[in-house]
Length: 342
Image 1 (cartoon, rainbow, N blue to C red):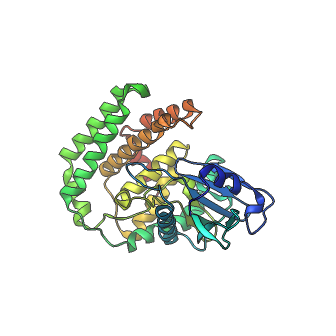
Image 2 (cartoon, rainbow, N blue to C red):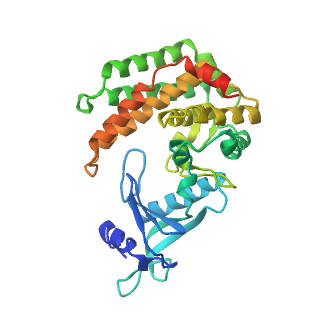
Image 3 (cartoon, rainbow, N blue to C red):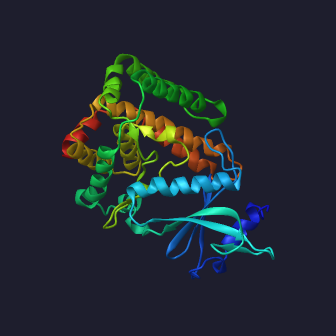
């Protein structure tokens, strides 16, 4: 049985009557990959029928598998948030139902809704956060890394992966239609290549010490909820390769995002909890490399929004890319910040 199409599906899911809990209202958020429908209690995420180089959601079966994988992976860092996968069905009379009888025509991730005012990005932006606020979440994340088994990868493969990432980001960010400062991009990329050549032993040591694990993949403040049982949500579920990383890399990414929001020290609190739990204290030079690596990557992702015809606020994403580039130079402040945060 063929489905009703994405437009009809979204129109149905916008209606309060579509949901078994009969909500007072439905909030709708569109992202690159999904439509997200929020009721007072729950979140329902519908994958868009898209196909890109890095993912394939083009059929209901592929979307079902991705929903199941999203639930499985995100349960690693949450308690009772990811409730499961719910079917969108089509009855014999052509009526759509969520979680009812009939032929499944699509699938949605079903989540418990978390309080927006307890998300880390909101707390940072409103200045209502201190070290003790983040400590339970930081320790949960640290234990997750400590318990994660090392992945099988050679030192050469790891270095080649990072070098390919820098080359790809350099190529995209220097495209003239994006209007970015290609001189700055090239300067940062050059420093990255120099590190890869000069300090490859630091990267090799991370592999030999078993530090490369299957992590979260998209560790940003908006994905961390500081509730009594901390929840770290929205991992990068569609690509295992992109989840294979050094926790130091992922924590540098989180630190970069906290700095962009105006409170870099929050990222240092997470790094401190990680070092305390695991005994791993990544060298400052390595953290600066990872920080720049993530800054270039985030600048590329931001500027790619200009290629999406559905995006209207081009200035927002151009400015976001430029901001990441501004943050993408090695700073002596990393060491000072690390010391002052302990």
